[in-house]
Amino acid sequence: MTSTASNAGTTELPATDPDALARLERFGGRKLLHEMIALYLENAPGRLAAAAAGVAAGDPSATENALHSLKSSSAQLGALKLSRLCEAGEAIARGGSLTGIAELLDDGRHELRVVEAWLAGVRAERAT
Amino acid sequence: MTTIAVVEDNADNRLLLQALLADRYDLVEFDNGVDALMGLSTSLPDLVLLDISLPGMDGNEILSRIRADDRLRPLPVIALTAHAMSGDREKYLSAGFNDYITKPIVDETILIDAIERWLAKR
Image (cartoon, rainbow over all chains, first blue to last red; front, side, top):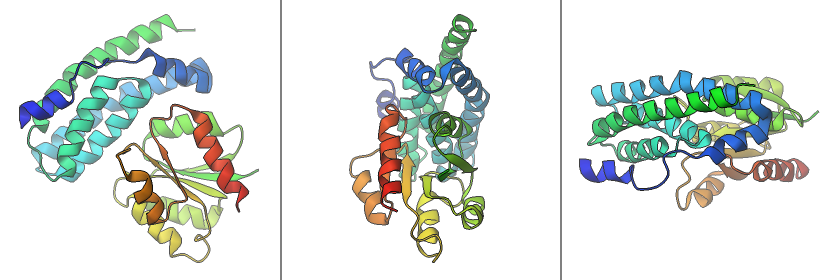
C-alpha cells in the first residue's frame, strides 16, 4: 500500500514545468511571477507541516485539506512532482485512511527542497 | 463596473485571480464561507467564483445557502476546483453550480469566457 501510494506520485513525469512560470508571467508580468513564488515559498512548508499534523492527530480531513491546498498551489507554479505527491496523499485521506501518507510527506519534504532551489534560481535569473 | 466575488482560501490563487480579472471587474474577496455569506448579502455581486475546498464550510455548503437565500439565489456561481476528477463537471452542475472551472488555470480565456457567458444571461 505504502509503496503503491508512493509510486503513484513519483512516476517518470517531469518534476517541474518552466512553462507554468512563463504562463504566470504572461498573466501578470514579472511582478506576479515574483509574488506567486514568494507566497508559495512562504506557505508550502506550513502546508506540509499541517498535513503531517493531521496524520499525527489521526485526522484524514485536516490532512486532505492541507494536501489539497499544496497540490493546487504546486500545480499552478509548475512544481508537478510535489503536486502529484500531494494528490496521491489527498486521495488516500479522502478515502478516510492515512496509510502511507507519512512516507509521501517524507518524499514531499525532499521534493520541496528541490522546488525551493529551482525557484531560487528562477528568482535570481529573472530578478528585474 | 461589474462586481465579482471571489471565495478562495489560498492567497496565491486570489492573487492570480486579481491579476487575471481586476482590469475587467471589481473584485470582492473572501477566504472563508462565513465571511463570504455575510459579504455576499451586503455587496450583492454580479457573479461568484467559489472554491470547493475551503476550511470549515466548503463550497457545496456555501452554494446551498446561496440557493436558499431569496436575494442571493439568482447569482451565477462558478465552481473553482483543483479536484478535477472524471465526472466532476456533471456532479457540480447537478448540485446547482452554473459552471465549473478547474485549477490550475492554464488558459485564462476559459475562465473569462465562462464569466462573460453567465453575466450575459443575467
